[in-house]
Structures are given as C-alpha cells and as structure tokens.
Amino acid sequence: MTRGTRDDSVAGTARRAASSAPPAQSKQNGAPRGGIDVSTHGLPGWLDPVVEAARTVRPTQLSRFLPPEDGRGRQSAVLILFGEGPRGPELLLQERAGSLRSHPGQPSFPGGALDPEDGDPHTTGPLRAALREAEEETGLDPAGVQLFGVLPRLYIPVSEFVVTPVLGWWRTPSPVGVVDPAETARVFTVPVADLTNPDHRVTVVHPSGHQGAGFTVESALVWGFTAGVIDRILHFAGWEQPWDRTRQVPLDWRA
Image (cartoon, rainbow, N blue to C red; front, top):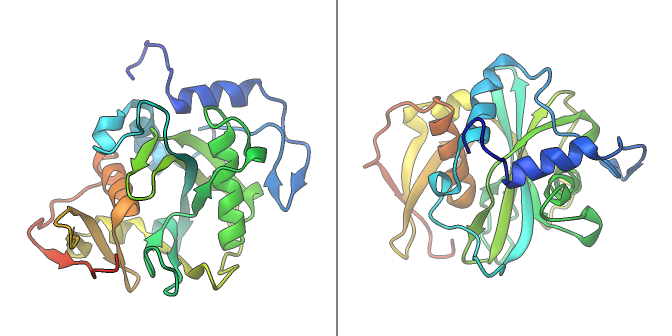
C-alpha cells in the first residue's frame, strides 16, 4: 500500500472498524470486550520505523507462505509486543513446554487461534484474539497494551494456520509469567539490541533442508515463523545490521 491509495488490508479494515466501534466498557478476565482501539498516538519515537513498515510492507515482502486463496486455514493471531526494558526496546516472547508434541521448547510470540467470541476475523477479531491469548498464556494485563498496527496475514503450511501479526506497545507494563506449565516453559523479554547484534544471528537449517532466520538470545534459539517475522521487522524498520548468513545451526529432527 502506498500513500493516497485505498487501504483494503487487514490493518486498514481493523483500523476503520476500531475507529467506528464504541469504546470498551467492560472486561472479561481482563481482556477487552466490545470496541477495541488501534492508535499510533503517543508512541515512543523509536517505534516510528515499525509503524511505517507496518503501513507500507506487502505480504510477499514478509513471507513466501501466504494464505490460500480459497480461504482454507485456521484463523489465528499473535501479539508482537514492544516494551521498554533496562536495556532499551525489547520484545515479549514465550517458550513452549518441552513436553509438547509440536515444536517442544520453541520460542514464540504469545498467540493462538481465534475463538468465536473474538469476532470477525477480517476486522477486529485478530486484535481481540492476540490480547486474549497473551493474557491466557503469560498473564499479561491487556489494559496496559496499546495496539498500533497489524501486519499482513501469513500462512504456516505445516499447521495450516492463517496468522495475523498484531503490533502492540507495552505502555503500562504488568507482571508476566507462566500460566500453564503444561503449555509454556517460560515467559521472557529480549532486548532489540540483542536481536540486531550480528553475533546473535544465525541461519537455521531444518532436517527437511529448509533454511530460515534464527536468533540465539536469552539461552534460546528463536527460529521458524517467529524468527522470520522478527527478521522482516528488523529489516523493514531499518534496524538490521550486516550478519554472517553462512553461520548455520541445524535443528533437531523433532522440530
């Protein structure tokens, strides 16, 4: 999308729906009900490049895996939550429990499938789902989060999830941690400075031969969908530093 053209993206539709909806008057388990706001007002200046990237990036610039044109796929959303920590800007991540059959021990954004009560998956449904899932998985208080953008929908072929990445600013930080140990091993934040540090960047090699971006941060290897989205945000926000793409890390066959 370029300035002056019609905005038919999920982000644009969600913004229009949010701006026309009444403000949320109540909460259930802390998650906002009714109207939901998407705004860039009052964001810290360092988020300006992310706001611009979300406004202009095209789906094909984020991934080669895009939602099927026939509408197949399970609608889901993730919360990409930026905060301000002791070392500056940071992102909130969680690590899946090692006992899970699917991607055990893999770091990810908080998120999951849309529930019927989240609403329309083409407007504000992904916004509510991202906040609801983040609260259920990490104990995050949604009242302290300012949603400021939505990236184009992406597709995860192995799970057939259609994922809407929702961007948030942790305006009022709240305590977070593991809510269900059977699902989540830990909840942690990663300084953006570590994500941009070339020493923490690797190319991850899946047993299938597929290669993708990876980050070695906070005693974890971030890979897959989460690493791919982070990689593209860093790139289009102008934060990426040159790194050695020949430095490879093989994944375990269970990945």
